Length: 453
Image (cartoon, rainbow, N blue to C red; front, side, top):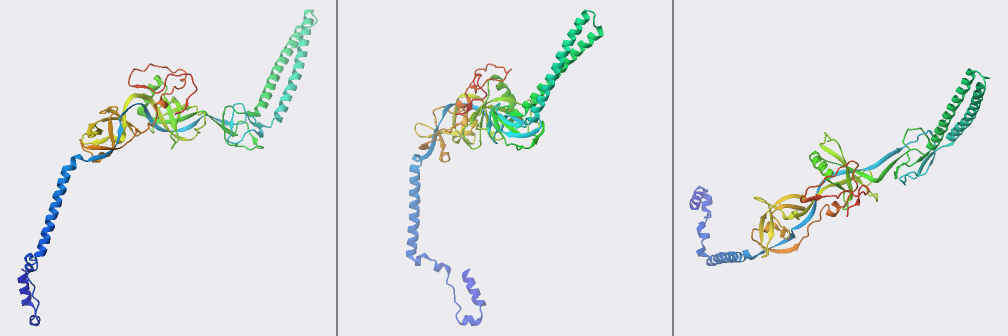
């Protein structure tokens, strides 16, 4: 081909170029012929043989040591624990009582005996309405009472005199009846005056406003010196925060279970602020009588002692409702459970340091802890990290041992005795099972039991 192209080019070239010596190409075979370069041929052969020997050596080494290589892994222990069965939700803190303090009489606000945001006690003086007009009204009522009492006494004296005269036929029947009627009328007037005095005294007492509950006072809404009207704008708002409510919702499919368990034992409610680990512990005291048709949820309310005032009205909290406690649950870290072709599996480390695949079934997850229904036994060692390099029967090297992650709700927090039940609540015996009540029978304590450990 190359020769033909060269001849063709030579024939087609101009005659002047052929005369000057058109360069003729050498055949390709002559430039690459190794027989003309023996050193190049020997170098290529040596390189080929060296690569083949190196590849064969690597294969032999890989085949000889592949079954003995150990895979470094992190392991954990299968344990048996008492595990609370819970339902989680979000809730809001509500004041146990919210009192809008208003004046029952009109007048000038003379004094305020508290500071904004101050903790106040039941019966503590809060406000004073100018009492002078009411003191004058009381004195006026008392004077009218004294006058009418004198008239009443005179009327009774005259009635007795008329009776004596009528007995001696010195007075007519008409005169006697008139005196008796006047005595009765003055007696009624005295009673009316006594009621007026009590009303005036009550109005005077209304000028001194005391706190109706133990709580926290809000901001003073009417400054001292302003005129307030009777039963008009609130002057201050007091929130009772000891005890305190936490309101939350759950899906409607849980309502029957919650109501059934509530009739058997007290249910614990745990509340914690976002980002905090410790939990306030209270008792479920209210389940709403209907489901919200718009959201498909029902409202519940827990009562907390809130002794340290950690919960504050209006806060949003994480809520955990403890239904019961599963005794002796087999648990393992969720990172140990893998998904295989036929379902969930766990790599179990044998005594000879080999990993075997065990099919398992997870009942539920509680945070980073998986509750096993079948497949594992307490005391077994399982792989929690490094499963990607494992095969059934692989040798393992334990790099470290990871403890079981802490539970979201400790059994101690769930099993603390709770408070007295609401009036009219009935108690039923719980059938024997692996689940135990999260709360023991009522012991007559105040609502809630403080903070969970």
